[in-house]
Image (cartoon, rainbow over all chains, first blue to last red; front, side):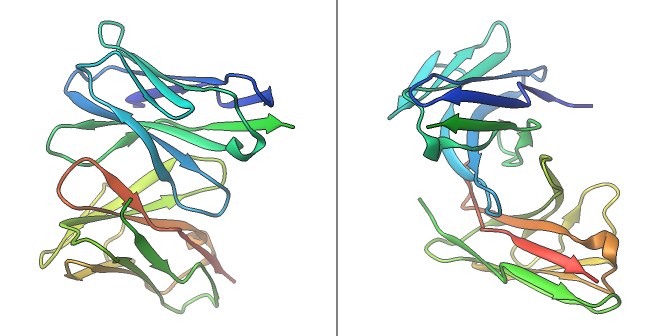
Length: 112
Length: 114
């Protein structure tokens, strides 16, 4: 049973475009929602995270939008660059467990 | 962010041999470390959770006698793949937590068993 559903599976945009990756969850006990970026042959790196008491968080060109009532959250990458080409994973964590439930990942390609 | 060092980056071994992978938290004390396995173009699959000084907790379906985890200190955890076989070939990743939701991942180890 997939507790965090991520879409799309793959995404191709032109440089400067704004790719959007969506995630949805069912478990209302989740209270921390991180996004990870993974380059080929490397481990994931924490990109940005949000808690359900805010609807949006922005760090540089990366923005998380969070809709608590819909149990959905999304990652927006502003002014995307070829260097942003990577696989992005959303995750959800229940308070106190520290064990993330990962989405299936989105492979992003940004063309020059 | 905090640094988690994982070694080796890649290893090739013969079937039947054992391989040890190290995971170190370099600038913080990790209360909990996690080991993941990742197949190509797939998500991370949690194998086990380990706390310093106690036995690891394995996820359902993970053979604890095959994948030995030792968390001897607050900065070091090791995963030993015993009697490795070709089906154990995979990308193994560790992560560490200092007691909150922020996880820091190692760079991963690509294991190829011939």
